[in-house]
Image (cartoon, rainbow, N blue to C red):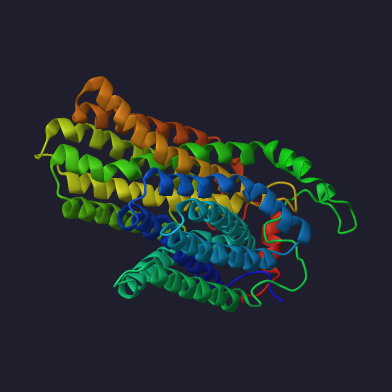
Length: 456
C-alpha cells in the first residue's frame, strides 16, 4: 500500500469536500431564507443558528485528537459525514415543525445545528489531515486548489438542483429534498474514501524529523489537554493559528458588506451587486489558479510563504482602494478593483492552505489532527466573529459619522490594516518554508517517505 496519493486520489478526497459542501450550503443559505421569508421568523434566529454552527467548531482540536489517537482518519470522515447528514435532515425537519410548534421546532433546530457543526468539524479536520499527510509536497498547491474548487462545485450543483425540486415550495418538500441531498452526500463520501487510506496506521508523509520525541505504538497517549498544550507550545503552530484568525476575520468581514456597500454608495441594484460578487468570485478563482501554477513542478515561482505574505499585502491594497472609491464616486473602476481584490484573496487563501498542509506534520508526531483542528477552530471563530462585527461596525460608524461613504471607508480601512497584520504574522511562520521553494519537502523524513513510495 503506497503512502503518496496521485491525482486520482486527490480528486477522490475532493469529492468528500464536495459532499460536505452540498449539505452545508443548504443549512447556511436555503434554510435561512425559508425561516425569514416563508415562516416570517425574526432574522436573528437563522443568524444565531449559523453562529452556533461556527461556535461548535471550537471542538475541532478535540475531534482531531481523536483521529490522532486512533491513527486513522477514514472512520472520522465517515462518522462526521453521517452526523452532518443527520443534522441537515434534522434541521429541515425542525423548520417544518416550526410551522405548527415554533418552540419545539427551534429546540430541534438547535440540536440539529450542533450536529452539523460537529459533523463538519470531525469530517473536515480529518479530511484535511489525510490530504496533507498523503500528498507529495510538489502537488500540495494544486491539491489545495482542486479541493477548494470541488467544494464550490458542491455548492453550485446543490443549489441548482435544489432550486429545481423545491418549487412549488412546502416544508415537506424541503425535508424530502434535504434528505435526498444528505443521503447522496453520504454515499458519495463512502465511495470516494474507500481504500484511500491504508488499513493499518502509518506515519504520514512529512512527519516530524525528531524521532526521539515520537511515541511508539506501545507508549501511552497524552490526554487531550496535554496534547493541545504541546501543539500550542510549538511556535509555528501558535503563530499560524493567530495568522489564520486575523486573516480570515478580515476576509469574512469584507465579504458581508461588499454588496451593501455597492448598493448604498454606488447605487447598484440587487442584480448588479450580485454580479459584482460574481466578479469578485471570478478573481478569487483566478488567484487560486495562479498559485496552483506557481506551486507546480513545471512553473515554480517563489515560495508559498511569499505568496501568502504577498496575497495579504495585495488584499490590503484592494481594501484600501475600496475605501477610497466611495469618495471618488461613479468614476472609480469599481468592478476592476473588486476583481483584483478577489484575485489577491484567492492567491492568499490557497497559499495559506498549502502552508497549512506543509506545517501540519512539522512538529511532534501524531499531533496532526490536533494541529489541524486548532487552525480549523481559529478559522471558524474568525468567520463567525468577522461577519458579526463587520456588519455591526457599519451600523456603529454610520451612527457616529452620519455618512455611508465615511462609514464604509472606515471599516474597509480597518480590514485592510488587519490584512497587513496578517502579513506580518505570516512572515514569522515557518523558517523551513522560507528556505525551500514550493514542492520541496521541509525535512529529510519527507524526502525519504516520498522517494521510497510509488504513485497511487
